[in-house]
Structure formats: structure tokens, C-alpha cells
Length: 239
Image 1 (spheres, helix red, strand yellow):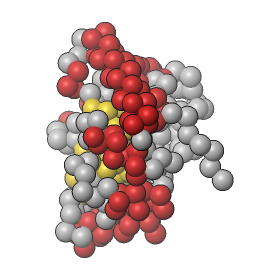
Image 2 (spheres, one colour):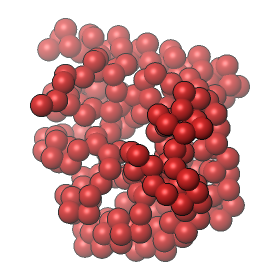
Image 3 (cartoon, helix red, strand yellow):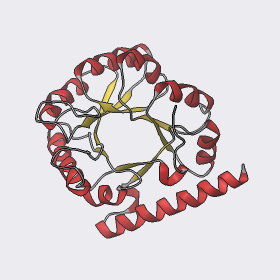
Image 4 (cartoon, one colour):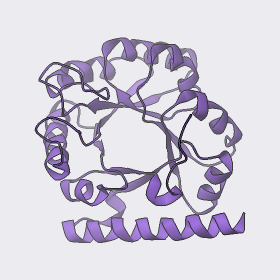
């Protein structure tokens, strides 16, 4: 266990150096960027080590893995983010442990999240997942609302009981005009965030960037970066 703690501590230090350097290069304060460690496929034991090392935000993308892990770590001072595509039949479970759902992308999901948040007497933070590989009104290959649908969906979240509109999230697209152009993609997300904040000033969160492209996300202005592999190591193959 000590070997694993040393490994994670070393990896966290390297990621911290990368974020700090990216902030310095962009003329930003380090405190402006929050690290979310994506713990999918890794054990509750690793989550406990991360908490001991000072990590306060963790993310999962599959409810069947996240629910028991969150339950096993319920005593820890962690904020849990759900970042995967979310089916409505998993909403009740996810609302039971997630503090923020970063993948809100359709009206039916908003309705389901609101119903369960009210039932659980919780306020759930919501980010709209933006698909930059979609047309103005389509959905992206990996989920997400097209830029043209943000205003309508944001209004739905903002007036839904039990939900709090926190901002926007994106994943650098693999296809379309932003494929291979992470910096441009994240800058586009920041423009969309500026537009959103005109109607919803409190929706300041911008979640973008992962292990391979966190520097570009910080340069563009992201407030949160989602890092898994760079902290926890190469993921074991599933299935």
C-alpha cells in the first residue's frame, strides 16, 4: 500500500506542476483551476489514498462501478462528479451520491434528475455537456448538446426544482472541424460559456481538458480539468 501511495503522490505532484506551469503561462492564478481525478476502473482503496493526499474532487462515468465505490468512501470529504453518458434508468442511483452531473445533454434527463433530486431532498449541480462535433441542433457521437441547443437546455435546468446550473463541459472531439484542435475546441467552449453567463451569471464552471490536453484547456480558461491516467496510471482493459 505504501508503494501505491508513493506512486500516486509522485503522479499527483507531476500533474500539479503541469497545471501550475500552464496557469503561469496563461497569466492565471493556480487557484483558478480545480483538479478532478477520474477514478473509473480504479478501486475504493485508491480513492482513499487520493483523499489522504489532498484530492477533494473525483469523477466516475459508470454508475454500476461508481455507486458501490462512493458508498465505500462516504466518510471521505469528497465531491463526486458523474461525467459519463447517463441513462434515465440510472438517475435515481446517481443522484444518491453525485454532487455534480457533468453530462446533462437533453430535456428528458433534466426532468429525471429534477424529480430524483427533489425526492432525495438534494441540490444537484449540473453542467451541460457540449458536443463540438455536432451540427447546430444534433447530438454528438459521445453525447452532448449542440451549441445551438445550449440556451434552451440551460433555461430548463435553471428552473428545474432540485437542480443548479453550474456551467459547461466538453470532451475534445475526435471528428468535425475541431478534431485534433483541442485549443480551438476549448476556446470555443469558453465563448459559449461567456454567452451562457449573460443569462445565467452563476454558471461559471467550465470543465475541459484531460491528461493529454490539460495545458490547452487551462490556456483557454477552463476552471476544472479532469485527469485520470496521468494520476492513476494506464487503465486496465475492460471486459
